[in-house]
Amino acid sequence: MKRFFKPIEKEGSAKKPSISPAPFSASSGISDGVADGGVAIASGEKEKQKEPLKFLTWNANSLLLRVKNNWPEVCKFVSELDPDVIAIQEVRMPAAGSKGAPKNPGELKDDTNAAREEKRVLMRALSSAPFGDYEVWWSLSDSKYAGTALLVKRCFKPKKVSFSLDQTSSKHEPDGRVILAEFETFRLLNTYVPNNGWKEEENSFQRRRKWDKRILDFVLQSSDKNLIWCGDLNVSHEEIDVSHPEFFSAAKLNGYIPPSKEDVGQPGFTLAERKRFGSILKEGKLIDAYRLLHKEKDMDQGFSWSGNPIGKYRGKRMRIDYFVVSEKLKNRILSCEIHGHGIELEGFYGSDHCPVSLELSLPPALSVELVEQGIEKA
Image (cartoon, rainbow, N blue to C red; front, side, top):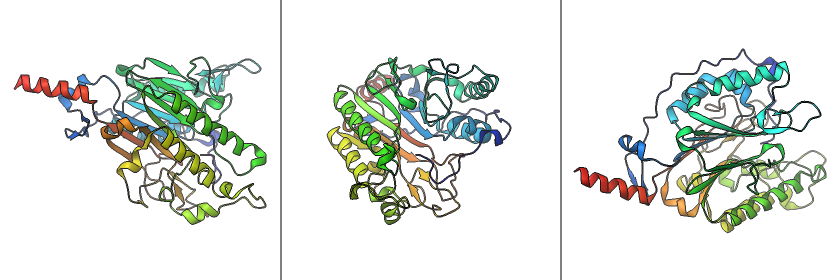
């Protein structure tokens, strides 16, 4: 989400890099229970898993700053959760390419001493436990703005990775907003959705409308496989998804009147955005995984973005980070959790967003195979 309310840390004032991660420990939270349409992975059957089942999404609000300032806590969290896939938004690292030359959005900039040092710090952190178990893909902006990263455990190598909504591997979306990984039975879409902004004159309304239409077209044209769509989607769908609906509905930019009533309010909570998101879910036959499992409003841990703890946005929070999945995966959803809580941003690790996780059960075919093997052993 665009940082209207929280000052961005200056990278020059960051702490000295702390890249000695917490010791790796495998997750002990794997369920042995059975869910409709599949089963969870028991520890003895981990080797049977053929595709990722546990996913994490997080808007890091500058991955380099998180490495410098928050890395031991981030490593501890990732070690304990042990996700198969980590989707990151707003990495804010520039793409490779010297001044005046074409950029390579798939590689980190390293043509100056400062850029090489930043790349070294970041890649050293990502090559250490627990992140050394993952392969990483980048989609980057030309400057320290936006950008996404996707980390996938090496045992689950995707069949294909592309960086645009038209699924062209060589083409990257502007500002590195998309990474799409295709596996055998599903596609994983990691997006940093453009913020709607406040003013039509700044072209932000039009940009967001165009993006929403392209996402809908992508969903409808990609129905041959199940979809897991995650990331900072920059929209709060219903009133339950914000802490103070009246506040966000009436929010405005001083001196500016939006072109229509549907464009009034906090970016991400205007009626126009919410309606378009609802249409994407309905027409694309998609499920909001968190809301499926969490029906009631949770004022402590029900929001993934929080305003600055100092000022008028203290305690004002939104749920704008999602896992949206195909309806066919509905019965395989074991959990979808928001991992930060409170107005003091506990579990946010320095960002104004906190991590969100999704866990699926094994697909039915593999569930049957495991049951049959169990009978034979007995």
